[in-house]
Every structure is written in C-alpha cells, then in structure tokens.
Image (cartoon, rainbow, N blue to C red; front, side, top):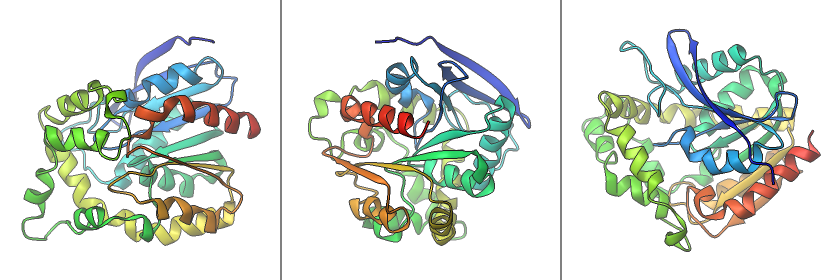
Length: 285
C-alpha cells in the first residue's frame, strides 16, 4: 500500500484565501473532491490516504467552511461558491479531472460542470441530489426556507447545533461505533467560529436555487453523458435512494452502488467505497 504525502496549502482566488489538501503525482488521474455541509476537506482525509498514493487528489474548502478565509463582504450563495471553485481550479491549472460531488458538492460541482464541461472526465456522485424524487420531507422543509419568508433565518439557525451536526453523521448508520466523533466535533468547531453561522444560514436560504436548476443539470447529464459512479448511503434522512436511481434516467451507463449507512457514507463504508473509486478512475483514465 502506498501511503501518500499530503500537502496542506492556501491559494488566493479573487480575495478568498482558499485552503486545500493535495496528494499524489500531478501526472496521475486527478480527482477533485467537493465536500458537503457542514464539513470541509477534512472529511476526505481517510479517502485521500487511500487514493493519494496512486492518483492526484485535490480537496478545497469553500468560503465559509474549514480553513478557507473569505473577506467580510463575501456574498454566500451557491453561485459564488462555484465562482471560487472555478477560480481555484484555474489557479491550480487543472484541465481534466474526475469530479467527486457530495452533498453541497453537488450544486457546486454541477454549476462547475455546466460552465466548463471540457474539464469533466468523469463524475462520482455520493449523496448529492439532483432530482426532485430524491428530496425527503425533511429536505423539502429546509428548502422552503428562503429570503423574505417569516421565521426562515431562525428555522435554519436551529440546525447549526452540535446534536444536529452529530445526527448528520450517525443518522442511518448501521454501526455508529464505526463513525469517529472527530468529524462532527470538528464541523461544529468551524460552525461556531465568528461569522460562520450567518454564512451557513445565507447558503441555506439560497438552497432553493439548486432545486430550480435540477432540469438544467439533468439536461447537461443527458447531453454530455460523462462516465459516472453513483454511491449512496441508503439511510440518508435528507436525500432518498430514489434520487440515486434517478441518475440512471439520464446516465443509463452509470454504475450505482447503495450502502447500508447514512449521509456521510465514507465514514462507515470507506473500505468498500475506496476500491470502487479506484476502479472507476482506472477505467476512465
């Protein structure tokens, strides 16, 4: 087994100091890892260790997450997150890569794909929804919160607390003892930093724009047909398994795997998932 050296770097992207993790040789197939809420690139540490010895793996933190530092005037919308990730990719000189989209990485990654289709060599989707049938009642309720709706900010603020952060990790898991508490503890630490909850509330109130873009993303998938690997924690309380199967309508050649775990599927099922990703990268090399 090759144990990679992982570099931890910052790069300036239009005034945003973007933190990222990078491992592997630049000449190897590149995998861009886009994290979810309320996490950061730290959620991929074990996956980077598993894959970074054979592939070029890059994982940035978005503005408002992890170690990335954004100016006070930064506007937190999914369009702006995609702007920063697009600028990040350009700064690093990545020209062709497989995109790993998890949770928030779905709307950020699909915006990136529709803007720069020539960059996308393949698509790995892990509990990143792009179909109406994938939205649970809980997700629909959260999506209904948007600017101008009375009580919306207060309702969204209620999910920025440690018990909810923990539940995102262990909810739906088969064996919660396999899920280290470090993940949700670190996520809550970042959520509790000054200004971070306001940033996350702004993003939550902007989430409805992602649902409105589902038809555009689905059309992009049908037209471009990227090689795709769909990985899904079947116990996810936010994004239901019909959302995983729905990708096959537009990507009939995609490979689909369901796992008996929750939203953060890598936490419990990394030993099963990492070889699937490696095989996919080898096939789409």
